[in-house]
Length: 140
Image (tube, rainbow, N blue to C red; front, side, top):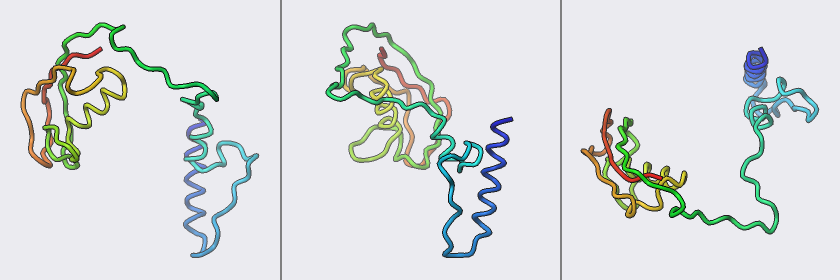
């Protein structure tokens, strides 16, 4: 019910913004307004807990991959390739493998693309989508 109220109020707010004359300022939202009266992006941000905040003087902890076991994994991928310049990794070009390596490195499942024993079962050209593309590598 709260979500429905939030969506309805956001819809009403958008309708009122669209009905204001050009050049007129948007309607003001007070700080004390309930979450259902806030624009959707503000209401959603207000509900999310703060994450990743470091205390002062606290340094980032280094991740020690040697403390964890690794195993060979085959990943079956599907992607829409319109924004990629193909499957195969290339410097300074957005590729599917580049996006995969970025995600696996960010989640600390691999340390780098060179250390994971990566192999692919096929590749695609620029703008080509795939369903069932297989890659194999060692993951934490």
